[in-house]
Length: 301
Image (tube, rainbow, N blue to C red; front, top):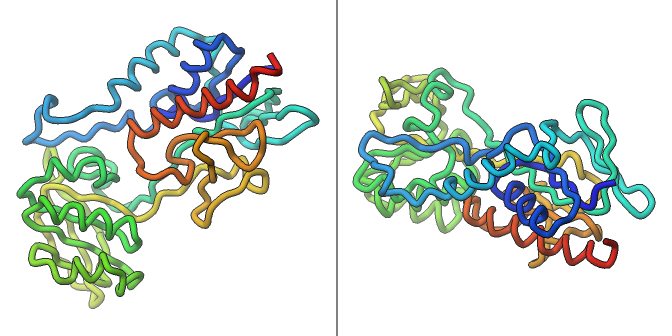
C-alpha cells in the first residue's frame, strides 16, 4: 500500500513526487517518461540560450534526482483508477494493480497534430505548439498559426503584438464573431486564410515555409520564421472518466488546493482547468497538490 501515487512525469508530476519524498511519505511516480512536454525545447537560429527563461532547468533538477531513486518511480502508463473501500487502486497498462491512499493526477495533455509532411522533422525547429511560451521570441518575424478555435485566436492575437506578420490558417469557420476574431480581422499585420489547410512544411535545418491549400484546391507556399500549431489540447483524463468531475473540455476540475471532486484524488498541471499551460505554472501546481495531499494523508500516517 502506497501513501501516494503520482500519475504523470511532466513538470507537475515530478515536482509533486519530489515534494512528497521530502515529506517522508511512501510515494510512487507512474509515468512513461521523465520530463513530459518540457523535454521539447524550441530551437531558433536567431535566439541564444540566455535570452530565454527556461522553466525546464528546474524540471531537469527534479528529473535528475528521480533518475537515481528507482523505488520511487515505475515507467508504465496508467489504464484506470478505481476506488476500493477506503483507498484507491491504480490499474496499469501492463495489468498491474497498485493500492494507494491518495492520488495526484498530473498526466498532462496531448496536442492535436497536423500530420503533414515536414511536421515531425521540424518539430521545435520552427514548428511548435505553444505561442503562449514562444511568442516573445518572434519580434518582427513572419509567423503562422494553424487552428480554428479559441486557442488559435489567442495565439494569433498575442503574436500580432510583436510579429511583423501573422498568417492565421483556419480550416473551419468557428468563432468568426468573437472579439478576438474581429480584432484579428482588422489588424494590418494579420492575414486570415479562411478555409485553407496546411499540406506540407518545408525547410533546411529549420522550417522555412508552409504549403497551404485554398478552398479551391490551389496550392501556395508561404515563407515564415515560425509555425504554431494551435488546434486543440486534449487532456489525458480517460483513466478517471466517470470518477472525478471534468469540465466541458475534459479537463479535471480542481479547487485552489488542487482537490478534485473526490476526496483523496488531487490533480495538477495542464490536465486540470487551471489557467495557462506553462512549465513554471505546472511546477507550482505540482507543489500545491503535493502539500494538499500531505495534509489529507497526515491523519492517516
